[in-house]
Length: 226
Image (cartoon, rainbow, N blue to C red; front, side, top):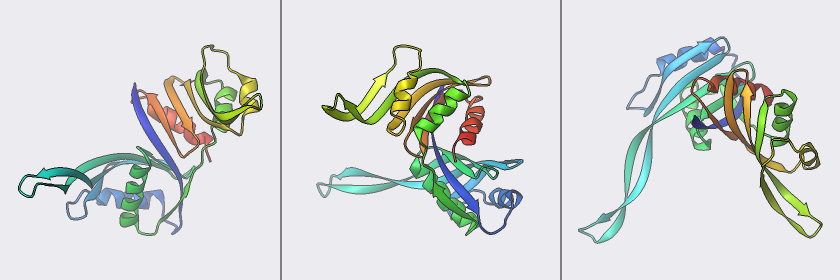
């Protein structure tokens, strides 16, 4: 299974443009060395746009200058591919990558579509998603759970991380620490898709699944976060 880091944001269209309008702009914005970015593999399926951003990104490294007998900074331009999805029904935008990949995408969309979008961070509460997994009966095993501000007999307090050795879900523990669960890892089955999902108290998560299963997993997660 492939492991993917997924970062979510919310977006709104503020100038009245339609998904077809945005799709047309991305189709026309092919990669150009002049601008250092472009879009390819652009698809529109009802209210969802999927595409690949290709962007030239500078990386920095140090090397030894033999003549001057000193370290010096060098710049190397690399090509980065960022797969992303925009759901105009749920208003979720998500990338396969971390926060830096999301920021690169926002910059490229701002250059391409100008002032079409505004964005909001999406704070994922692990307890809410854990409840959804249990309620929808998709969780096969709860593999790990982290609790911040965990108190032990009013003597110790700190971050508590537990790996479960029993398949039985500890409902009492989950309810008792609903506000302080900071992370959990679970194996799930959504329809015919199998995945291991790690949820944190941020707008990102890690998903391990096959390439063909990831869209089913994305759709489910997208339906559960607001």
